[in-house]
Amino acid sequence: EMELPDTPGRFGEHVANHVKQYIKEKKPELLDDEDFMEQMMDFINLLVNNHNASNDWNDVNALDKYTPLDGYLYLSWHRYGFKTFFDILLNTHNNGPGWPTLDIELNKEVTQIEWPQDYKDKVIVTCKDGSVYTAQSTIVTVSVGVLKERHTNLFKPKLPEVKINAIERISIGVMDKILLSFDEVWWPLDSAFVGFLWRGEDKKKVPKESFWTTRIFAASRPMGSKNVLTFWTSGEIGKLVEILPEDKVKRECRQLLQKFMGADIQVPEPSGIIRSTWFTNPYTRGSYTFDSVACAPYPNSRTDLAAPLTDSSGRPRVLFAGEATDETHFSTVHGAAETGYREASKLIRNSQI
Image 1 (cartoon, rainbow, N blue to C red):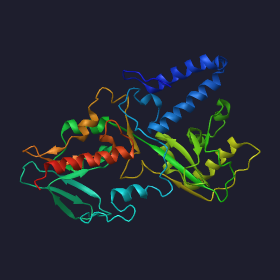
Image 2 (image 1 turned 90 degrees about the vertical axis):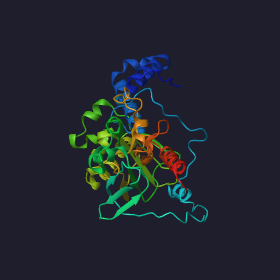
Image 3 (image 1 turned 135 degrees about the horizontal axis):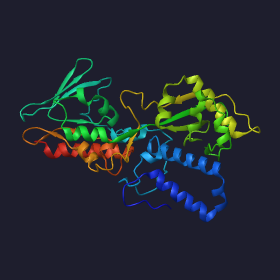
Image 4 (image 1 turned 135 degrees about the vertical axis):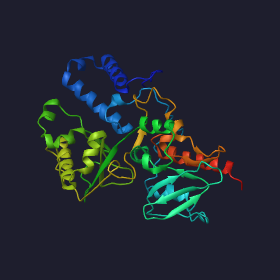
């Protein structure tokens, strides 16, 4: 088990030193194999990036505040999909009655949030279709990627400088999936993971237009599906894969699999493809945030982002939730959910009802 440092630093450098020390103790002869060491480090770099949604492992701060949850972390909800989670939030799980006063409006892109300075005024939310909503308070849950792109025009008056700085400093990355389905399962069902560890000479032979395939970390079988493989990518290459022609992505992912499966296994043509587009989606502009080296000098950035916009009486009028505002569970669904409860609780405490 790797111990993390107690001071900020580049996570990649820390991991590389730990791996080299481990190999020195267990397999010292491998240290003389320069190509293996280089490609192994690159493989671990991709692993770290796919976990953090970063572009390079040295962008990640070795000292972060993330705290794992207790309990069995691999309990799968995949049998019924993420719908189960929403059913619980909506109080409709197991034929629950729901929330009678809940009103969800779909296809309502918000273009402006006007927050009042005077305690007598209301928040005014304007949508792209021209509809306008007024309220005592509102909770904003859009991603940091969207805030980076739109905060200047989204809020009126503009946000306080401390919040703008937080938005600009917090790093949001990209972790994308490419899912290929097959008519038949051609791999052993107990083989749930295939890591792509290249040789340097083979990587050099890959054409420039296909080099993105060397930045795919691995393929794995998702829980709950037998005939699907998920290919994992991240960072700038993830952004590229989102905009490549779909047939090219499907074809070259199959070729990648074939290369690593060898001559004894014939990889069939995929029957379908689905890929995530976390960066190109204008309503996300990224997958989730991570604690970066660049943000290390500003440890209060997530707290600053979470701070509400208040009126002249100090009453919170625009509140902020989402994974980026959670200091210990950022990048996760449970982090996003618990910040929603956090901000709703603030409104309840400040309610005159």
